[in-house]
Amino acid sequence: MRVISQAENRRINRARYNGEVLVETLRSATSPKDPDVLHCHYDVGVVTNWHSHPGGQLIYVLSEAGVIGNEINGEVKLNRGELVSVPPVERHYHGSTQDAESEFLVLTWGVTNWDDVSPRPTSLAKQP
Image 1: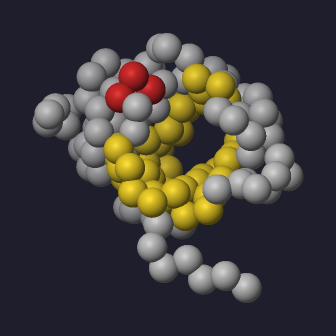
Image 2: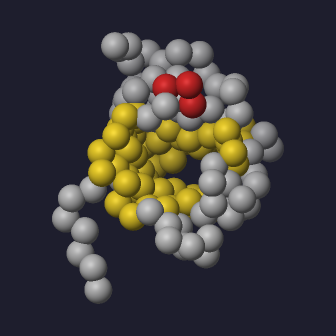
């Protein structure tokens, strides 16, 4: 057993988001069968660029609300306590609503394949 008391905090690559996101790496995968485990905090109106994961992704909503979108369903509002299962290679994005910050616990399998396209313009959040 291993208890992780202090995570690695980092700001993200701004080219992959439309605003500020703080990511805590709780656990890095040690094999392709294991997920990376991240705690992500999105400022108001911030979402990821379109992207996919070769092994899929689980997203658990910790905040009051959040959003996720794909090419079939468009953008869907998420509520606290909901779990989203994103299948392998499904192109999607996720983040905060236009009026509140969002916080997720994220498990990701494989290296993320990023697009250079955001589904939203620059967020309403203050830019540095």
